[in-house]
Image (cartoon, rainbow, N blue to C red; front, side, top):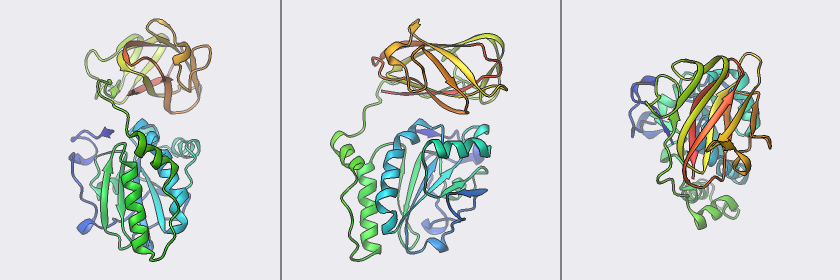
Length: 315
């Protein structure tokens, strides 16, 4: 789960839950809408509304997405409206071409409110990605969930509200996704390296080593010229990095694990040759299925202008 720093983005405090007036669905004031005409609280009366605050590079949200898509698929015709609220963590996430590609890449078909100015975020009193807010047919907040997990609980609440809102409705079986989760539960993240930011604002001393001609900006580091390396000690089985290509529009990054080619532990964005090639601004999957112990990740690139923002990890 990503929690915003208290002094950033309008001083939202951790643990707050303001949600409109008297816990009601707030005005959905968005810069623009994707997959829908603009929605508002009055027009959603009589519907069960799940507001999903997300960010397209956020691994924690990406892990929740199969459940959100299952709920939209299974219950939209029965009175559930899923509203995705995209509030960007990084500046590039405000650009229409980037977020629209993120929507396509993730296969989102439900209404998306583009919340570049954090208007809906503030109205909800939100403080983290991802966060889910469930409202009943009268627009009253029923519950809020932050981060990953509790998918069986969320779906149970959705079903309860649909039955209460539409008497006699015939609900389908509980989704396969929530059923499997209820049997297996959330994997443990104990001992896993915390999210690691590389930009000057949030980089912790000693968390990463930069070799070569890197320029440090508030949110990222950027390779000026020559060959650059990023060296990261970590404990996890999965590693992802939010990256952005330079002026050429594409980049290639060689991935080494413990000083050797990545091999079978390569993530989905790394080729068989151990090189991650990308032409988008987003999360790049570097490592998956590594032994859950202490490792050293080394990234090597010679593409000027390539930017690195933040590492995230998984078991």
